[in-house]
Image (cartoon, rainbow, N blue to C red; front, side, top):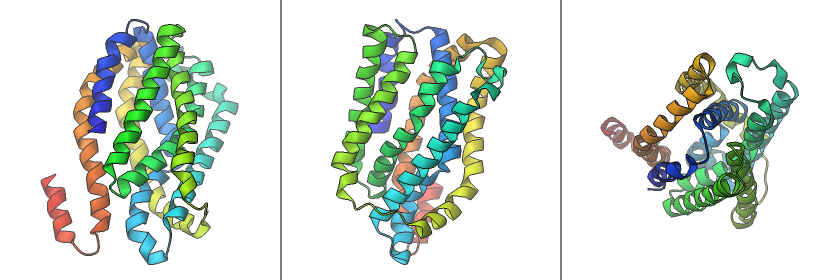
Length: 282
């Protein structure tokens, strides 16, 4: 439900933001979001995706507690993403001009990528709630995070009259704010534990999957980069707007995958026939 509502709200608020943002603004948003997503996966190594597997499948075998799984995943992904972003900022002049095609690294790409590590704080908590099959908390987190995000975006774009950089400012502030809120209501309940032996097991699981995930993201983003490079940012922006309307249908797929994943690991040792039937049916 939350996945569907998030997609639908993008369509609902589109007429409002389109009063203040141009096709070029949406093109900038499209390209920077794609860049951020690629950086996030490459640097984070998909570690957050391993939380469900280790909670159900590895925790009992290796006596790993939820505390060590949460904090080992969080601090590793946060640290690796911060390091790569620092390197990109230092050497941003080496980025091919055709990739950005007139999009200024400062402030657009800069603000977008420094938000990435803080997003990991939110994703780890959300993934954990999904892993323990607490759908209500996922719903509350999604709705409160996105609602506040909309308010910040409206504040910067509609009231302060920033261009698309207002969207980036709003997302950045919202991520920091929610990171602090989640520390108070979620992370503080666990005991900080960083387990290097667990990290090795996580990396052995995650690293082979990274090329597939990165290539999949690049495959989905290459059309935006092509339009931006060949025809300009405004074309990429128009295409991005269309994708917003089409993406609502993918919300069902994402919701089903999120629901199946913990069930899969929960039953992997004892009920494989049921898992096979569920996957084939889906």
